[in-house]
Length: 594
Image 1 (cartoon, rainbow, N blue to C red):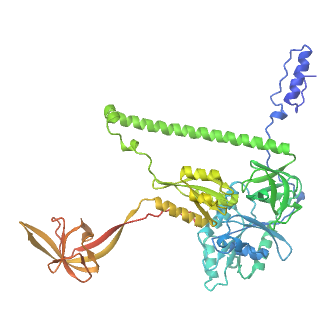
Image 2 (image 1 turned 120 degrees about the vertical axis):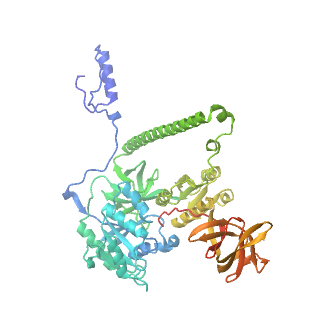
Image 3 (image 1 turned 30 degrees about the vertical axis):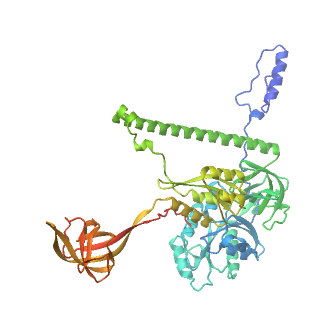
């Protein structure tokens, strides 16, 4: 019966039916109804499942992010909590990429801690919708108080509506001032419980382990009050915390499971990457059989590297994973095409505006003069703005992303431009070296191996601390900036008397002075000031002491000064300032927040 086509019929089914109908002599044309869903043409993407019913939810471990200002003791605190020594292995004791760890407290409860390189990675994860953080432990040094990055963390937490527990660290130092730190926190809107507020503030010493049990208890109490639960059934959902390429094991990612139980053999999709899980490992590198919600796990088996902050969703089969990836790649390509068309339209508008301006200039200047005469410098000169080109290669995606977030804060101006030629995860390749040669770029190798041969042909700068990389880049930008004239005051003299001397038939004014500050040098510039107004700026014709021509006059010595401009007549009470103009290198005003 060709009148009733099943809703799930495919295009192949329709073709077969059409052939059968045609062979029977029936000229009826079989077409799908407007609302008919053709399986082969159905666009499929996956999204997180709807929330589970309350009865299906079970208690899970809290995820705590440790944040704070540079060198306030975040990593030392985590080391002490989990009884390991990661800080000693970090460059300068500063965490350069995100790490996820599970800590078992004394009461037997488990807590997942995230150690971040600051607020950049946290902001990137929140921007992608990866709201995995339940509690923020804000580490503040007792001797420094609230610093710049501390304020940024507080604002981030308040915007994201994430509870904050403050750990005032380094209370064992003599210069520690706990009460001042609490006052600084109150000015930022964090009122401690002992001051009538609702923020738990725990004074600790991460190095000596003082009051860490109180901090663990505060985290446990806050998690209990929040009633954190998750669905342990169904397909797995999670968030990528970090991704990297291991020379022996291949592409790896650290993730936190938020729903379901992750097991070996699961098919995962994250952005434009997918994996068939070949192995699960904890933060110590030990194999795991499964990873329940709230657990950090290192996943082995990715075909491509997923981005930090991307959602991880499990699918039933690899066929479905491939369908999802094709759909997402198609959408990404479509968005890219739309953006490209928009850029083309903007370029066309800019070109048209420039053409109209040139045409107007040509009309006003006259065709003959414009065509055969000297062209305007505005169009003849090339863009000579100095620029610094860089290539960034890092060991893990989180480090590269944090560096790129900082580079985006640089506002290119007419003095110097910053061009990011290329970035990526992994060791420096021949392609990177060729790019550096082509664009005269600097390669920043962040915690990756540097080829010895390549250092002779291009500038490769190894580094393992983010803010030192930025400091080096700021010096490079400053070296490209034009020098600026800085005035240096050398000396000052008071005019005691005005008199004239004969020079040929002319009377020339001379200022009888006494040097009251510094030293007066004849070869330098002089400024005549009267009642706060500058009367003259220029050089001297003559400097004399007791009828002798001299090159300099020291303090408390009298002299006669004669300016080159004979029309300038000094008066008693005037001030004469001797100064020099020095060309000094100009420093960039780029402040990325370190």
